[in-house]
Image (cartoon, rainbow, N blue to C red; front, side, top):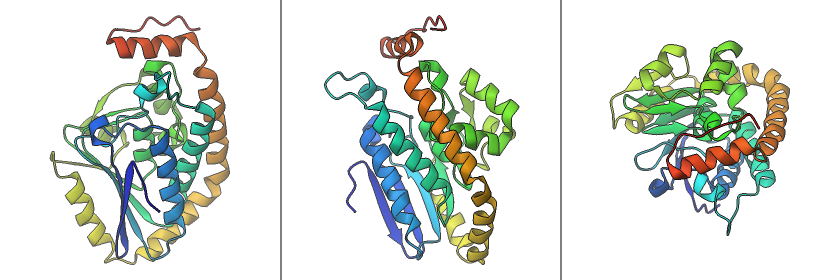
Length: 260
């Protein structure tokens, strides 16, 4: 399948999914969300691939949802359709029959951070900035952000990160258990590929089987979270706080929220 905003590259038992909108810091427009879902569903059917690296082209992993498209009156983002693709993306990622590694450089925010947290191993460079920052524009995490945060750090800490939208360093994220390794700047992609090479020399089929055993019983919970996120996100998109958050972001000022 040909893709416009991502690349899906295969090399034997290794595949790489590369977010490829570098001029937009790999912000996810509706096309990228759909293509990521399609790529993960394609990989679900590829039993030759045993390991998948997810990374961003250029200076960022992903800055999150494309706010420029959210505010474009000529090509508005259809939130209903988008949430279908976001849910497809998250479920396909969680159920991939491969070991997944996120290689983060630069920003990993919003939906980009949700996707990274959905991977089995998360590597980030020292100067990376990581944030579940939906709250800044009056939205809730999507892409199973609630589910993946809870899986990694539990409900109380997940709520705090969601509610504050804190922008974290890689070291802070590692100390919380959100990511697994911190590497020097510029090293994430090569480190991920080196790790992949080592894992492919192990009994990786057994690792994949264990992943399936651990993930499968939680699939219904994941689907429930995705539906709740979709409903909440569509509701939040209609709020005055969301409109204020978007306006403030575009105008580069501090938002004034009123809880409306």
